[in-house]
Length: 541
Image 1 (cartoon, rainbow, N blue to C red):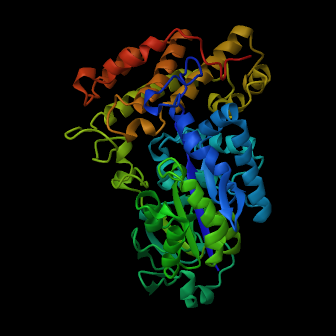
Image 2 (cartoon, one colour):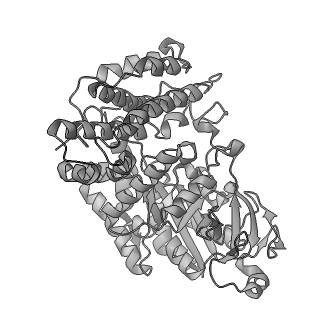
Image 3 (cartoon, rainbow, N blue to C red):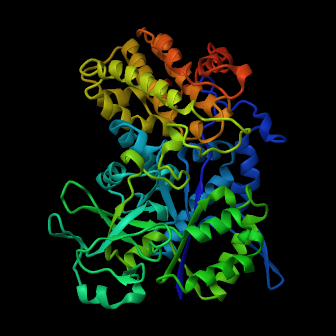
């Protein structure tokens, strides 16, 4: 039997108007109110109860119970509020899979609001991971074993954070592997990761101990590429602090993922499983595939039904054993060490930009949509403007130390509990994090500072840079969070960084000349939202 793992990354960016907490109509999603509702109808709901006919009888398949998956925390929050039945099926699918796979559930965590982690500063990296883990514990009732990295964007700094936060494994794209070597001990320290059996590692070439057709000898690094990395085994990445701590890394099968996403492999279950069988000869006991979850039903109509039939009927009949990463890792621990590709300038690598993570910081040529002759030079000034606002807000947040908060950054990390539970006592939270009893005015001020920080995190949602122009709904959405942060800073009586923020943003030129630049777009689409009733995620007391 060949082990088979299919991972679906289910995600939509947060879409709510930050002043109201409500999603405004999105005409591009017609006939639905917004894109969340449209993709829910085409993908999220159908995958929770796909109806197939087997032997003349109808079966209802919850695909989430049979694939590895992650859901964006902001998307799950929306599903819980608007489609509770489907939300419950997703949560139940993880519990069912955990019972089937020895306590290892199908669900993995996700960095909180899909920020590109290598481009975040150290504090934001930590908060994004901790908020994602906290959201997972709140919803699934267990500790996460893994975290999906948005766009699989990663570098050494990010992997070290995941290890620090206790995560067990991560899924990356094959082009993110740089080189591998045999051994399960960190040769920099001699600390063993598990008992070593070198004779077994070297003799079993069928177990993935070869790279580029050659045995991987102890201590020797072997350079790999997206086409030569063996995706049929797990690898071990060691923390750079010399402690011997590590995380397992799975690299998904690039060809199968591409076929499913772009080459009509979901045309039928037979076609799909035939592709699996063709790859079996090259796999070392494991085939693992990762794609956007929206592939199954939104990008490919009836993809949810194809997936359900393959999982329940055709794949098992062809000798594939469904599992998930946690269970597989328990049975087959890593025997090879890996170094990852840190990308251009050490900024990181990803699955959707051949230039590393340049797609989210500069005009690298990678984009989706747009017209001939358009450019994405606006990306750099957009990020620079947000970085300026983030850093300015951080100065005033740090100044609350000893006054409103004992440690403002620990309070920020813990404030996810207020977002997850609107009924949680704000007074009790502040008693834990304030150096003294606060007056009512001081309590509201402290919560206002936390709300500035929440918006300063949300404004880095990756979709803001992914597409073709700064005038798109995704960049405007992240500018709304920036606008709300500016508004809250003004309400707190802080010196306004608005003028300088807009000066930097004005350097971002739209490809739509009639819309001008980023500052013009901000004034046109964000400023009119001010003055509406505020979203009270944190400010409810």
